[in-house]
Length: 439
Image 1 (tube, rainbow, N blue to C red):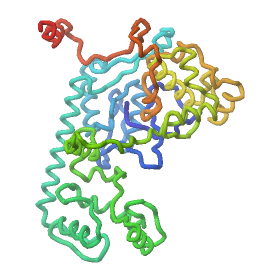
Image 2: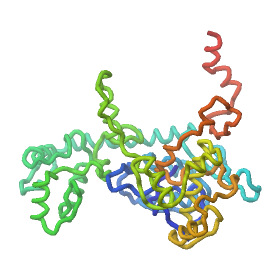
Image 3: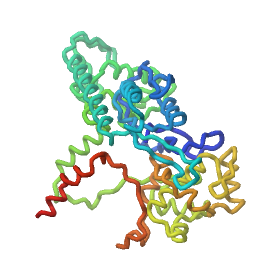
Image 4: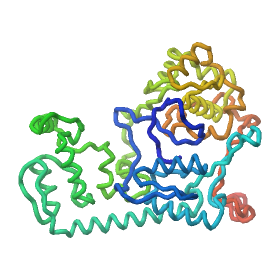
């Protein structure tokens, strides 16, 4: 999907009935990951692909919503696009030359309903070779710029700055200051050769200290002395690694498209793992699934199902068994209920309310918790798309017994978007299956 839009996960009232509006649950307080944005704040404008609308780069969600609501176009994985202004300018030019259907996958909503209620949405993604090549070129250009900047900083002898923690002055090269802070104040932000935009990095840290904010836990204190004592006693003289504001200052974050330094590091660590190691003490990260009806989170699926059943009288397992729901039908049902609740509408009777509280009271008082509309209402292709992009509940749905059997007569037609089906004859002739058959 497109860039996450941080919203109240169960907001209601006054929202458009857009089916593909990109949503994301607020991150949990225990430090969940957030989208990586290596683009520095910029005054560049983002232009609409179809009309004269534009907005500043820092307000990209406004333009993405405009593209969705006005032109029914979704850009996949916006957060992985290195230079969004140039990306949009390129496609704006291409759309002037050829129709949008030449480049985008078409998704038809309400496909089984009346023709007049069907709508076509367009998905622009890197499945299309031209889009993939564009994204890779923009990524490569950004990497070249970063490496050039890093080399300039390595060679720079005009560096001049005071230490963040004492009054000592440093000139000549940035490494002298960074090594001093690591050696004398036990504060290290990494090896100098791993850092880029060093002055901007130090400015960011200095601003936080000037605002009396701890660099690690990011709490604010009443005066500089209290802050200094806190950072010393708590050993908080380091930066918060989960704060992705710092990501753009580390070269490793520019090396692989869409990967943070933590992901790259974990891949490197896998090469060091001995196959004979004992993994018995390994523990998975908690799933932190969110309830369908409230903001409650649980760290196991049994707990979230129990919560929904005991607190809201909603039994997803019972509905699955009663309606004999296959896996993808469960996905569509969850996304449908999420969408209706987000829009402040009772999913059972479609009545709309101005607040979530009123809607939930109605669902309980009218006995609509376990009431579902006709299957054709929610068993629609548009509900393959997650209502919330980070909805862990979707990842833990289980197949029914029927799905696990070898009986394929009840199989569900799952839409698959082919990357290139322009020449089926050529594909058949060059398929590796022909070699296997010959053998």
